[in-house]
Length: 115
Length: 115
Image (cartoon, rainbow over the protein chains, first blue to last red):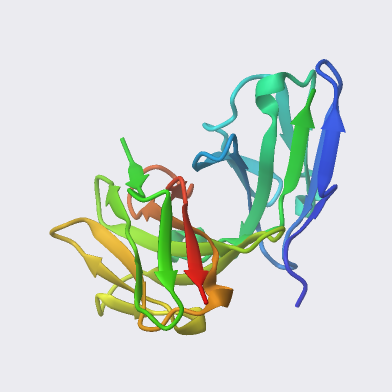
C-alpha cells in the first residue's frame, strides 16, 4: 500500500511569488490534514478535509493560504503571495476515521524556503 | 489551551543503555496520545499510540510508552538503545471530545545514541 506522497520535496521561491504544494493521501482515506513546522518549532495544524469539504480550517494563518481538495482525492495548498515567515516544512497526513483515535499517517513533507 | 511539552531539546544515551524521552500534555478531556519519529530526510513515522485500556503501550522497533493520567505524562522508553534510534521524536495529543480532529504536537526531542 502506497503511503502519503507530497510534491515537491523542496521549493525555493522569492518573496511575493506563488507556490502550490500537492498531497496525495493513502487510497481510501477520506480525511486529509495539512500541518506546518516552522523554524524547528512544534508541528502546527493548518486544516482538515473530509473528502472534499473543509472540516476545520482554524489553523490557517491568513488568507494568503488556500487549500483545495477537488473530488476528494489529492489536495493542494497554495501560498500567494509568499512571505518570508512562510518558510518551513509542510506536512500532509491522512486517516480513515479520526473519531476513534485513528492514526494519522504523514507524508515526507515539502520544505519551503522563501527568500 | 491544549498543549504538549517535551522538556528536553536533546537526549544523549549510549548504545545498549535504556532511553527515555519525556512528554507531558495539557488537554481538557481524556486524550488520545501518540509518538512519531522523524529520521533524517524522511517524513513523520508513527511509533505508537494510547487510546484506552492498559497504560503501557508497546509500539514499533521495541519502543513503549506509559500513560500516567495523574501526572499527565506519556514518556517514551526503550530498554536498550540502538545507534539507529537516533532521530527526532515528537509527542502528540488529540482531545477525544473537543478541538476537532487536529493533532497537537510538541516541539520535538532529538535523540542521539552513541556507539
